[in-house]
Amino acid sequence: MTKADAFQKGTNIRKAIRLQGKYVRLYLLAELELCLQMVDAATTMQSNQEKLLAIDVLIEEFPAFTVEEFHLLFRDVMKGRWQLYNRLKLAELMQCAREWEGQRAEQILEQQHRPGYDPHRRHSADTSKRKHLALTPADLIEIERIQTKQG
Image 1 (cartoon, rainbow, N blue to C red):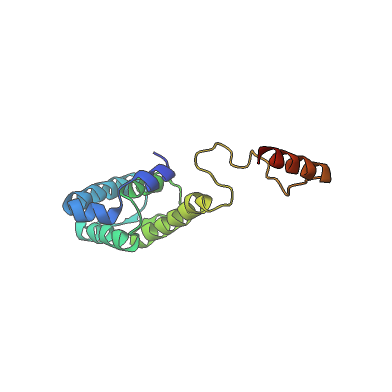
Image 2: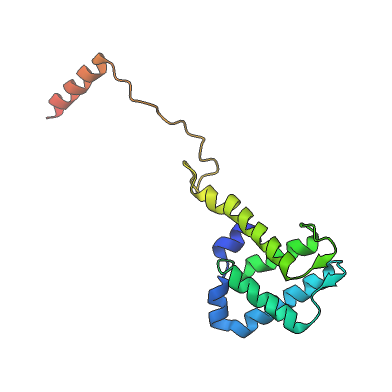
């Protein structure tokens, strides 16, 4: 799953919490647990209360994220995408999520608002844009002749 798919086709975290709050929190907690096990950091979250608080704060601070984006975020933390300096606590997770959100805005949202962007074309700039319509006097006479002939 790509970032774009996770953002566009994923389930918004607020909606998921509203519909199946307990299960979504458990899923995110399991993802966080796996992340903490995989990251080689001496200072990490230890208690379940601290982990649950981290999940609640992430949900509260990033309500536009989807469940799938949280999954990809934790995967990127496990892969070592960010320098954590031997520490993985809430502050580091928040910084990773902020960078993720910034990159998402840069790569996905801004791309949708570029002039000439067409999501259904492979290359939106492959057609040349006409600068102006250049008609000669002969063209205008020909157009008038055709219009009077039809009318």
